[in-house]
Length: 564
Image (cartoon, rainbow, N blue to C red):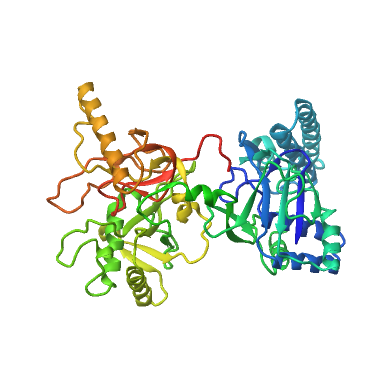
């Protein structure tokens, strides 16, 4: 085996999440570690033997990670002036010095002491004074008659830092309980030359993530280091609910090619592949959690852009029932004749099934600061108790649908709203919304993303009489408790009915289409809910009368103080 231990010299790890720049990354991603190794190699001697050692390490695949819990520190937003064009060549060099001084001030404000902030402010004032002097020299009268135009002076002054647009910057960080992280490849057996090459480059690595995140790296030979107390082990596992960026064979070449393009200046994306990880012991904890009648093994379709127009449809989550009906109809068109009852939800004579069957779920963009509530994809959710023949019938229908499209995106017709273009997800999806593990991990607290259609009318939830409202609310809570029991879950110890959804981006219940959609049917009362159980409950949680048709989808809320 071979391992690399990274010691965080400042006791803090500063790096932004790849999917949310306002949130910190933890544990450190293996692809980020390898990028730091290649950067140290490129800035050093670029030895061929060391490069070959890095190539060998990249081909070893995803490592196990030994990391403790960590306290997140998001911090406030700071602003950096944008770069202007060098309209006045002689003073431009001074402007660059001013940019550097202001960058150091930003770092000091985010991570430094008061003394360091004062020193950085003084440096900014000094360089700004020099900048003004150079600007005055370059814009003064030339000779007796030649004078620089006022428009040139106005444009130049407009590019000074205090006149430029400000760009927001975020410096999220974590403070781990143990300031050491270990990456372990337990099955790797390097040769002596590889160990020597890795040792040389490890000694040259000075940072991981942001430049203020100083580290010291060393090789280790123990699967479990002697001081591993307080650190949990993260292992690659397709059932995991944490997706990290890892690398594979040829990663060093990809990083060098990417650097030729961005030159360390232009925006860039770290070459990587996405790998689910599971914290050791989480599987056992999840196995002990209560489960519903629905299977966490989903078939997920993601929305793709229209090739002709180059943009996505942006269907709102409030059309959940309409979307579910459209996906069900598409699969029925390509199913066996007669269709499998668990797919259609009805017996051959048209009577509804009384046993669990397929549910069709829209997956909306919710839960982040800028979530829009747009549908990012759809999922087909099976019951846990499903026979091999039933599963094969579902896959045949999907296969026929895909074959009929001839490799083009699947078209989900939505009537007046047009159509939604989909493709089946067959690899690890980096977006949390489109991963079943996001919706199915064990948790005690859950909140609805699409409102719950109550099985019966609870009464007037918005009457003018407080006593009438109180009775209706209590009746609704009891209906929700029974809905949980109906899908095999324990009764929640607390049920809240928030006026609007708890998830950012989730529309209020009143914005959803009436349910059921078909005319003449009795309209259900739909409410958002928050549930608290006395023990962990594993999803998926689909409750209420609309649970097979896109409504009543719940998502686990994070426990207080949990990170990640």
